[in-house]
Image (tube, rainbow over all chains, first blue to last red; front, side, top):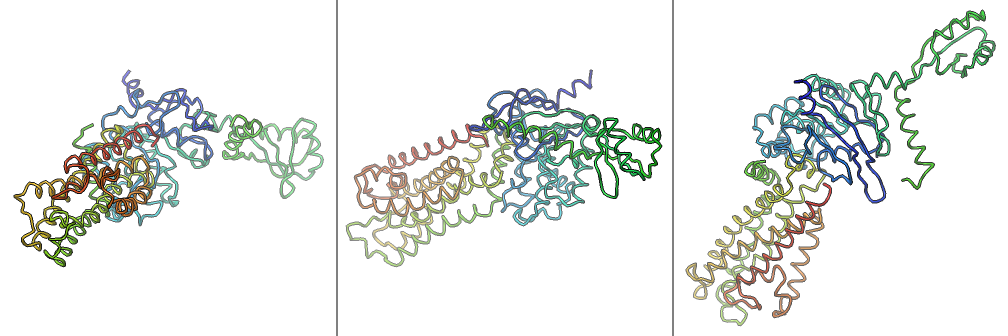
Length: 315
Length: 245
């Protein structure tokens, strides 16, 4: 049962978490668990409640009701929390007139983290060369790296990163992706928020999706893709009118596309090929086209937006 | 959490902010500069005029020096409220009471140390020009003024720090306190024996006189300033403890 113990030591547990600001329910009866050993993508459009949830987990904001714990304890009860939990909330956090090294040294000192660890994380995040520069002179990407350096200071088992790839160049985005995967392989709990599905799905093993403060999905990434990404078939023929008529007769809804192609949603190739063969229609092209992941995600979050648009008194 | 570690962390924060050292230097330069330049210019020629006070005449510069002390206290606290610094700080030290106490200790300590150097140098430098009228460090009032003046500067810095924790903006605090000290107090300054005697700056400055003009005794006056400071610090604590960061 060793594995079981490790899970409970570092899992992030959110139960019935609710945060109300005036009339707005920023987080609404949220319940989920973030497990170690994998990257969990925390998705939702801007204003869905991702950052608020992270602040609630870190004890920065007080929940209206519900609880958030890390390894079974509220964050604020942790002794020397940087050694357990690393967080990147806001790249603007370091004061502009401090040097990167000064910012990290102050954080490290409070949790009795040795100064040499500051040099290590500066190296690890690729900003060692700029360590003595004032943060004011940093680009957004460099500030982001400094924020990640701060999160890694205490070599924590749990990481919460709010939009870490924000402002990074393409090379930086690949770097952060590899870093997150490596941290998860080392058995750490990694929660990473983003509003971009395509990017997140490329490195997250698990997805937690929010919309208007509510939980919309809590599922392995591959299950989400399997369940939500509808198949689509692209076909080109010498007799478009007849194929169209045949498809309609069999309950499909072909849509005309460029170059005389037809697109048919919600079917597999194996259904269309034999059908055309039976009717003796010549096919010049028959291919599966996956509707994008981004579309599936937008469909999911749009459903919530539509619900709220129809019931404005809920807002 | 180790209080010593948190104190050290806050000390690093004070040290690594550019403006803090400058503001403390300004406390010293403004106060001692006025003490020396002012008294060098007039010498003991004023000594017989009715308003003359051999102690306050060397501490005249403290009126400007305290603005620098207020800036120091404000800056130390307001740096947490620029960007999301307070969130990074409270993620490292979630015990807000410990964080706040360590911050205030690192305002009070440097302000008091700077204050002591400032008041003693002002006294010795200023008195050198007063001839017969000058007091010596052996005089109770003089020693009281030097020590009390330093405490006064530390209290004003803490007062500003507490107020900054309430308003969460250095600019707001400075645009309230500086006009207040420069204008309100100077305008009301002549009318002693009124509520003006109980304002935080007027009350505490009683300790700087050989013959205090106000209603309050020197140490009682400093006590009134300490009460103002305690109120601001407490208000700051309630604000930090209750509000979302």
